Length: 361
Image (cartoon, rainbow, N blue to C red; front, side, top):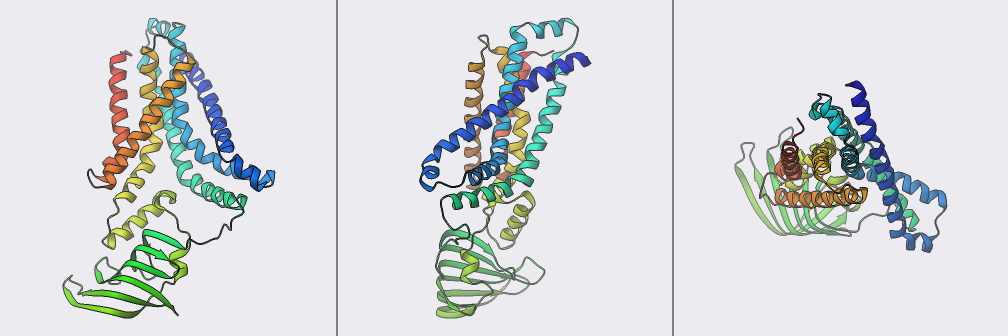
């Protein structure tokens, strides 16, 4: 049993690591030629370009891992079938499903590694790569965004801002929510069609409405103003400086951000989809194994070219399904968790059905 386990692992791991190396090379070469015009035009130092690509590698590594798993399962079991080695294993009295256990353990380990990379490594290296690319293009990496649309901001005093449009010290469609200390109960809601910064933390709100509430949630007062001055802790620099998007946050930072939004009464469906996807995507490294094995066993005309083509098609369909799930979850058609896990659930169901039909007993 141990010899067969070692043999199966060796047969699987060889194409797995070769697949990762080949896919990473494809990613690097494709990215290089995609931005070759920038490198030729700006002529950055070679070491700067090398450091830039090194910082891109962790992000690409996480992306290619599921494809490498699929390729390895197709190549390994296609080869085992072609040389009748699976028949020999069955003839020895072993059930193939027990032989698969080491591969499942390995793929689960890769799922955990993918998750760790995605949370602990990728956010930092991706941010550095973005800064380096701005330097390569001879742009100031600290340049602030002078124009932003449809964003939310959590202030220093727990004030939650929702702004439709912001540019150079002026905001349109601005909503402020304040809360009672130590609670998630709203103390006041301020809305204005327009707000302009006057200096010294003073903002002038135009066509504004202010609602104030009691600790029990009852409306205490309602006031309307054509023009009113309000002192805020935030200045234009706070709203214009670069901020992390939900997709760039790690799991716990994003969870805290979601809770802040929901305390402010805002919908956070898109953010919750992204949060659940941080767990769902790494697990695809394991789910894809259940697709590759039966496909390899059913493929009568085994070839590595066919295997590579099948792997790419499955990955494209998976990403398409992820996009559909995200859209459904973000729009509230299905719960955000269901939207994030939709692709995994569909592919896991298909994979388990295919494994059952493949009769590995």
